[in-house]
Length: 262
Length: 290
Image (cartoon, rainbow over the protein chains, first blue to last red):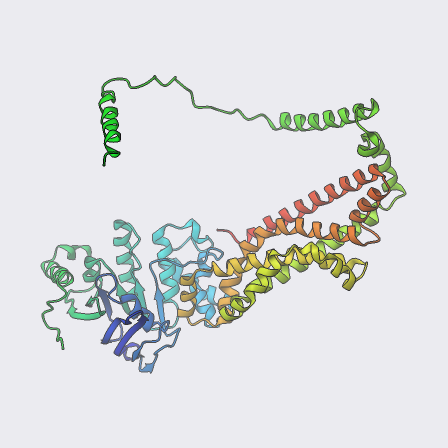
């Protein structure tokens, strides 16, 4: 799928502050091929969320250009699906009506959207919850609904900002497998932010390790593990090597192996 | 330094006097059970409520009959009952009720709807909200009843002036509540809507209004009381009909029994409207399940 590539060219963001401006993101280039699963890991304050806001069009970068599927998407909203750690389900809407929100905003009528979405709810583990309100759902179920809401709109690039950060370990593992399954079905480009190195290695094709002050990418790591992935991988030596490398980079961001500093 | 020394020594002395942890310091706490209150059955509660009413009215009647209470100022239950009969059979009771009810309800609806619209409108522009703020605060802190003579002058003696006063009383509370609701709209939720490509109008209809609805529902019961106050005070000042007007007129002519009649009817009317609004609230909340 060539149409859903994401390209960032010289994106930088600085915020005005007292005593000069604060640079949240140093000029950053990133190219993500269509249908790839990329994870961003890095310490708090390395600009991951700022970067997401820029890609989602919610923040206009100080300089640089965002291209999605060949179109200039700098400062344009609605070009990507964006999901946060908080599920943001509207408490006054049923699960079904929450999931159709994106389609509704894009002008589809409610009955039509419901009809389109219902089979997906049934297939992806929300059968029987369609007419329930979000308050009746567990954390994992709520995240499923939120993710479906993000996936079912007609965008090719999906931004997931620590979607499983608030879940317990067991639910998290289930959700990761569920995400891989749904990603394999939808074939969208996914950018995934996480603090969990295991999660990043387990899910991704490629990992970008970031560092802070200013926010920048210090290393691209290709994850050469076969798909479909299973839990056995967690004991695989390649997996462990990749994990160790990520952890090393996170603890010593100043000594990257291949990054050029000016 | 010299001052602190004795204090230090006293602290040390206190320390030395502390009982050892193994000992039993001080008096032993008496053994206590957890206090438990046993609830009465509902029929006992109701029976007691009726009993209290009968006792008070009975004492009032006996007191007035034996001249312990001055019946000229306080009237007495038998006279009130008699006067209530004439108030309803040959008096203005039904007209008064209809008049006051119409004023209150109109003021309630107008004030709530206009206030909610005004409060919600502040979502559209932060600058507009900032410009309006001092005026809103000014109107909020002003005792609205002070405007009554002016309102009567402008809107006349009829229904309109009373509705205007009831509206004035409910308007500000509704505005401030709706605005509080607007400011409480989750910014992350707004970001979600915009990330999905929503227009401002869509965010307003699908996020801001539903988010503010619980705030508006919670204000309804307060507003019905305020609207009634506005209507009755308006009638005090200048009116031809209405329960407030009857109370005022009866007071002027020392017809204390009639004052009590009208107060009693007003009480029943306000409870009835309160119950009505509670039902409305319940019904509205069904659409806002959490």
